[in-house]
Length: 378
Ligand SMILES: Cc1cc2nc3c(=O)[nH]c(=O)nc-3n(C[C@H](O)[C@H](O)[C@H](O)COP(=O)(O)OP(=O)(O)OC[C@H]3O[C@@H](n4cnc5c(N)ncnc54)[C@H](O)[C@@H]3O)c2cc1C
Image (cartoon, rainbow, N blue to C red; front, side):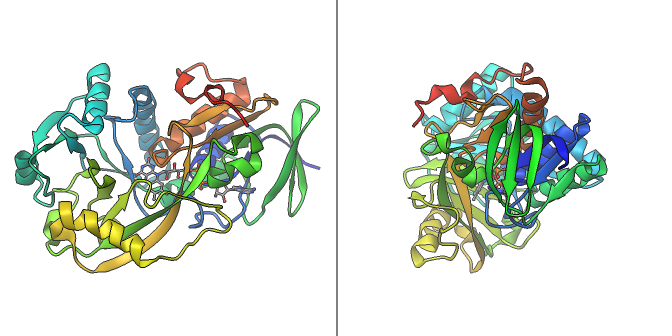
């Protein structure tokens, strides 16, 4: 039986980055993925993801984001392809709302250049937006798009070039701690390693039962519409956005990569699901929810539907990530509960998971916000 330094369970957004960072640091590493690489059943598909530096969720994310930007650019150089498209970004909401307050707090604490724009100024500079008079935006020039499928491909390709091994279409059935290391049984074979890194996305609680109520999969639906005035939705005049409104929190993108204006609503229909049994089709209500937001705030984008997709969030109770060692087995580490905002961090999460596996901890960042111990476990 081949023995590896590390096994990565799940080669999606985070696992592909962990695989690369482990291989880059000289580890003999195996990545195991239950589906084909780049599949559409998890959390990391749909062409585009938002990246932004002003971080309304919590200022603690900003140092990690700065490192993520650096690593995205490094990976672009390694792969010789574009993974990051800077469009500028806007956090939008009521003038004294949570979104604006959170965004401004992270800008002030971390000296991030930004501008506050009122609804008229937004309409003048970015005419695709139609905000109500009581809304405002924090505009931040570093916001933009990362490309999730290409990111997985480039991380895996770079890892393979460093002699990593990857097995697609192979499902991990169970793992156990063995003599300071781990044994991992799949539907094909059994493997041994010194360390196990669990990056199982929506399946996290199948791999670590202690995460049962802490990493809850939720169905999401996205739409791409054909704008009535397409010139208002190109990257040059349409920054990515996050928007707090009385109808919920929306997010969206200019036309990029595939035709259409891409739009979504956080916690689309609040549907907790089993990732192996969820509805991957669409109902009339799925589109209606999204159409209400588009009609209200982006009337010039409210043309025919071009595409829809389902995707999965994996929510932690406080919507902050879980990055930690396993509570019983320090040779096992996990990255879970990305709560719909993890992709932009993928390369820095990969680096942190390599630290956990190689050094037994991560000294380079303050990860207090992400400790598993902040929750009571089942
Ligand atoms: C609609 C939507 C919009 C989003 N928008 C943004 C955004 O704009 N910006 C942003 O930063 N983030 C965004 N996110 C969140 C981000 O995409 C996720 O946080 C990120 O993709 C999570 O990556 P992951 O590696 O944890 O999960 P995944 O990429 O799903 O990877 C987990 C992998 O583990 C595999 N696996 C699981 N169990 C097993 C097993 N037993 N054996 C073998 N393999 C296994 C799975 O098949 C899967 O490939 C969004 C998410 C969704 C759904």
